[in-house]
Length: 86
Image (tube, rainbow, N blue to C red; front, side, top):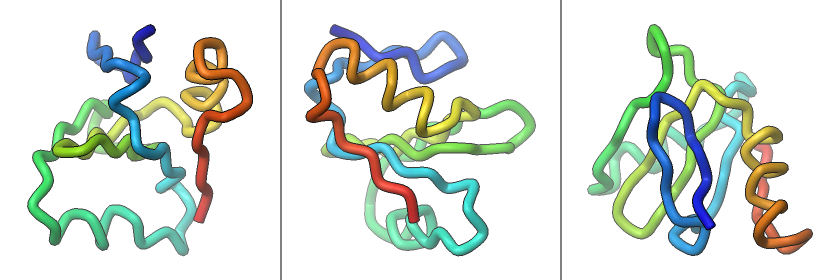
């Protein structure tokens, strides 16, 4: 199955390593991963990101909340979907 990340972008559920909530002011996920050599795709509107979706080689920034993406992923994966809020 595929997960819709926004902006007409879909990725395979099996390619997802983790979904992070980056809206939290204390979150350092984006800062930690941006320094690593990941391809970054910003799917958010006006640069207002709510979540970060990590795959093996790409970091997706989405305006869709991590909780919503988690629910969408669980429809295929069941309760084993990975969700981490920092």
